Image (cartoon, rainbow, N blue to C red):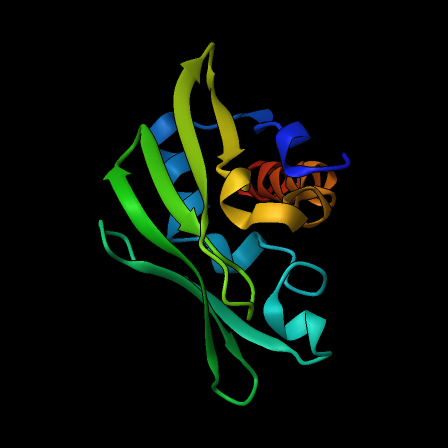
Length: 155
C-alpha cells in the first residue's frame, strides 16, 4: 500500500458454533471477555492495563475501554444496531484527530452455526496517510475474530 488510492476495504470472516443471537450477544455485550486488550487497545499503546471494554448496545452508543486508572477511551460509536444480524460502527481507536473509518459486522446462519462477516471501510477519510494507518488492520482483524471464535467455543 503506497497511497490512499490503493487502500481497499478489509473483509474478514469467521464461522462460529452458535446461533446468530448468541454470537451477536457475545460479540457485543461480551466483548470485554474476549477482545485482545493487551495488543489491541489504546492503553496498550501507552503500556497501561485495560480494566474493561464496554459496548453500549444501542444506536449512538459507544464502544470504549476503561483503563486501570479509570480513564475511558472511546474506540467507536454505534451507527446501526440491528440485533442479531448487523451492527455498524464509526471506528476511531486513536488519540489522533482523524475522522472515523467504518466497521460493519454481519451475523448470518451457516449450517448449525453463524458466519460473522466483518468489513472495514472508509480509509480514504484518513487522507494521505490512509495506507500507513490501514496496514496493520488485515492481520489485526484476523487475530480479533480468532479470539472471538475461541471465546464462542469455550462457552
